[in-house]
Image (cartoon, rainbow, N blue to C red; front, side):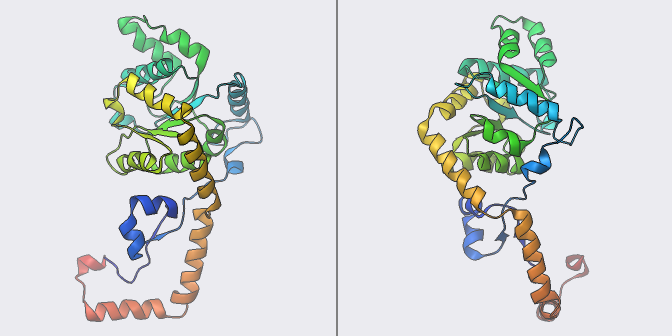
Length: 285
C-alpha cells in the first residue's frame, strides 16, 4: 500500500526463513528478531506482584522442579485462548489425562481457561473419577495464575501451548522440545507446522480435536527423543545468538531516521511515488 514506507517484522530471521521464504528472498520485510522482555524484567525481587508472579511463586515453582531431579516437569498453557475453547471442563480433562497417560509432571498456566484443581474436581464430578485424575494432579501438577516464560521455560523438559507468537518465541529460545496445539486460525497453525519442520517438537491439530492419548503421545515423544531434544537445544542456541528484536528495532528506526528522514530522501521518495502513481483519498488514509 505504501511502497515508500519501510516494513519490519518482529520475527527471528531463522523462523522467517522457514515460514516466509519468499518474503526473505525478495527482501520485502526486514525480519529483526523477536521482541524479548529480558528475564530480569520478568522476575520479581520482592514478594510484590511484578506482573509475572511473585518471588514466592518462583520459589514454589523451583521447589516443584527440584522435587524430582530425575524427571523435570513440563509446562502447559494456552494463554488468552478462552473464546476459542469455551468448554473448560473438557479442556482440563484433556490436559490431566494427557499428563497421566504420558506419566509426566507439569506446571500448568491457568490462563483465560482458568485451569485449576478446582476446575478438575468440577469436571470429574460429572461422570466420576475412575482414572484417579484428581489424585494424580494433586501429586504431579502445579497450577499457576502467572509465570515468567523467560525464567521458567528453560527449566522444564518440554513446553505445550497454543503456538501464539510470543509463547512460541519464548519456547524455542528456551532450547527444549515443544508441542503446539493451535487454537486461533491466524498464525498458530503455521507455528504448529514450524516446530515439526524444524524438528524441535510436534505440531498437532486444533486443541479441541486432539484426544488425550494423542497429546500424551506427542509429549512422551518430545521428552524421550534424543533427536528432538538435541535439535531443540541447537535451535534455541541459534535464536539466543540472534539480536533481541527490541534493540534491533531501535537501531533500525534510528538509522532510517538519520539516513532517510533527516536528509529529506524519504520525503523525496514519497513525492516521486505520488507523481508517478497518484493515489485516491482512501489509499492515502
